[in-house]
Length: 328
Image (cartoon, rainbow, N blue to C red; front, side, top):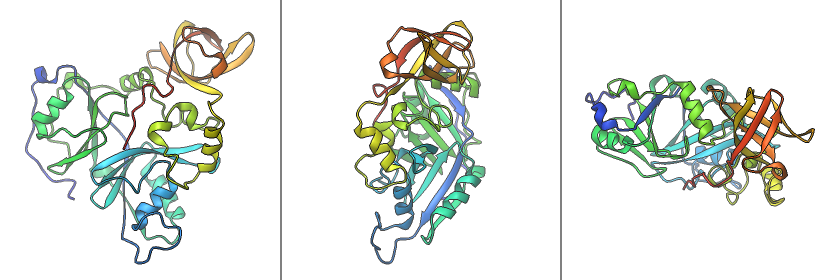
């Protein structure tokens, strides 16, 4: 595929965008490819070595991904702690990984981990722009601009641009557009800043790598089980640690969205009840009004107020399970 393939100039009147919003995402893109193994060695999970590599490393089911579809994955340490997360798009016979982590760091570590496998990595970040469009009117925009609207977790390709319907980034209707996008015209008034997008992430209860998905917390506490982890896929790095938490039953902590009542919201502040620490703030909106954080399950109650190191918060809603979407 030629990522810098030119396509006709596309435009859309502001009136057609309705409530649509868009943002230019700064994320790494990595192509992962290889060849079918000549002989299926013992322990191989797939006939293609690059599929086997990803399937054995990450938390979701890679070998069952159909062409032109995608899913969401975590990369864990042996102790189950997150290293990075990826949206993995299967395009023809290769994969494109979308991640916050710098491509150079990922490729360097993957080259170390692949051992003798014939798996290859290419940094596509310089030639792949990434727009995320979402909200009311976004599907109409795609239909007018590209003549195609993919289903959830499916990918379409038009003039060298990948279009994927991604209901996980904000837990609402939204579309990833990736490729050469310089001639795509979008209504300027409907763009979002990174700060506004981060506020919307927190409002939407979406955990983020390095914030909620980080050392000291099991990914299961972030409520990502039913779209990030396949409990039936077989072995992957960190599987035993995840299984131990899973089979204990309910996690001891739950991810919660909260609002400021008094004082300030500060990332890293502890939450207290009756003089005891019962939680921790992990993300704070740029507006300073909302936050995400972990609270002990037996201390969580919707509407409850807790003291923090810098003020007081009110627990609004648990982010556990209910608002997440299942991937294929």
